[in-house]
Image 1 (cartoon, one colour):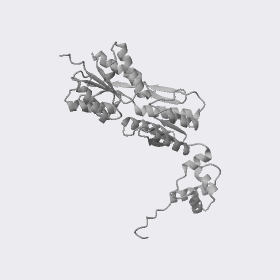
Image 2 (cartoon, rainbow, N blue to C red):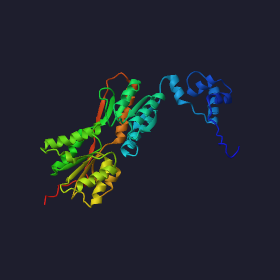
Image 3 (cartoon, rainbow, N blue to C red):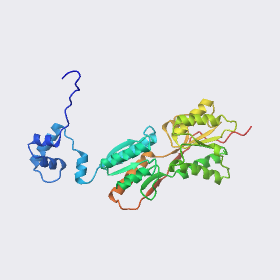
Image 4 (cartoon, one colour):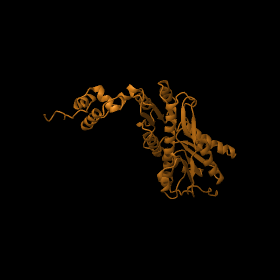
Length: 345
């Protein structure tokens, strides 16, 4: 072989190779490997030995097509860099593995185009079902039209059309805002990434409901759309906390926004909670490692993933039932980041 020629790699063993090695037909080899149909014990042993020697791996997709079933599920999440989605996927994987399913995991990075591309790939590979943290209702509609069971997790766009497993976003956001109001805060900023999804929309609704029930006039200038990451939140927090009439408390609608707010207080030399109180919807490991710790809503993303997989299995086994929405509770973890506001000078 010349220096310019690419190296040759041995090809993977095929069913035909195993049959030739074992000295039997391909149909006998297939029955021996699948355990379906009669094969003499001595022949089965010879086939299995040949398969092991050749390193043969059965074609799972072809087997699924023959049997008209699949032991693979598709999982489509928004951003694996965020520990929430990584933990959600881990919960799904744990339950899937226990039930004998293989998981195909795709990160769409918040792109609706990538989300639909992944959904098409799932359909092409004949997955048994899909769990998705949807960016819109389009992906669920597409999968349902393809007769693929789908579970919307964390966010819900297709209520009444497919199953969902979500958190009580509005209720927990209201409780968190109530906590700040009970401490005496009246100028409470909400840092939020979006309000068009059920997560952001319901968290904003819970915040607004708490203000209304406490007789506090909402101030639109205190609802800050920060974008999707800590960098944008940090800049927005620096801007609002530098004002003379800055908020005495900030409610960050997710863990990345909370990180940005926390970094901004350090940039400005502000003390938590003496100068500003901070709470977060979503806990993260760093929040218990800083001093003071950040009071946070702890969503058990692993449990959310497990519940989503359980719901998908139920839907696979009973495809004709009415769609079910499961609402999980979240826990508020009080730490040291909240206190009564400093009296006005």
